[in-house]
Length: 353
Ligand code: MRU
Image (cartoon, rainbow, N blue to C red):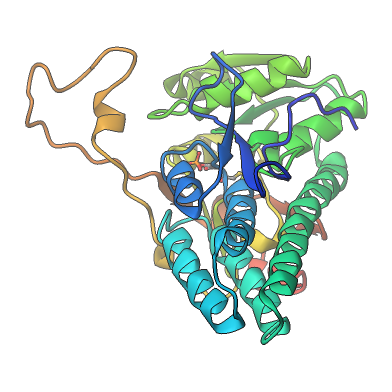
């Protein structure tokens, strides 16, 4: 497995333990590591997208809980539990759409319950072990997704992707870019069309950087070019990640994904979703129940130069961070357990952990 992008988010044994992450707000200009010594730092890093992408947010939150335990001054188990509850509440309030955040926190809840009543140091060690298992497990799931997707990707395929569902969005390897990496490593001679992904340009800043760093052929386009390129017959399939998949197969992902799915259907191009089972929310019947994060007006109003407000400072701005693609537009969902196809209610249920 080729891997030249450094680990997205890890634990580092310095200064009593820190959560170390690539500060993705600085990419692609600078590759800078951010060390968080407090839970508040991890929470703010998630909020401002220093660490982003559904699985990576989950990993950061799990490590954040371990950090809370390590930083807590508590010398009895009740006091430590109280500090952990406060940390959990803060982390859970960071971003609403990616279900992996809540999945990872519930995994940490389970570890806390399993070690109930143990001395604080034993709890600290147990939470760090569990958080590191979540990170390692995510990496393995991504590699399995890549392996499972190989039969979907033809030789010489031109793959279009939206946002960044790569190593940077996971513990490593990526989901949608895990599919890309696996096909590249298998010698399929693929090429990737990278949507720039407005407003925050995760495609232009992060996916283009990741693919370029690893020598995978890629071409960056603006979001508005995707339909034209499809119309030219230059896209063989679309592969995206997801922040939350409802039980019926509706897929929440970065804003603009739905547009790409509609364009793909218009051009008869298969639209694939790659995600670990931890992204499936079995409690939600359909995508209209998925909470869609709304972010600040600044993100739409600013580009390298301010594009809207100078002429009309009060212009209304709507900035939903995600959209939902109806399951009818999804040709297949690839997970670490295999390939799910419609009807998704049954095929996704069969993959439940
Ligand atoms: O706002 P972001 O950058 O966190 O959005 C990320 C995405 O939409 C990804 O496609 C999704 O989280 C899947 S990451 C494997």
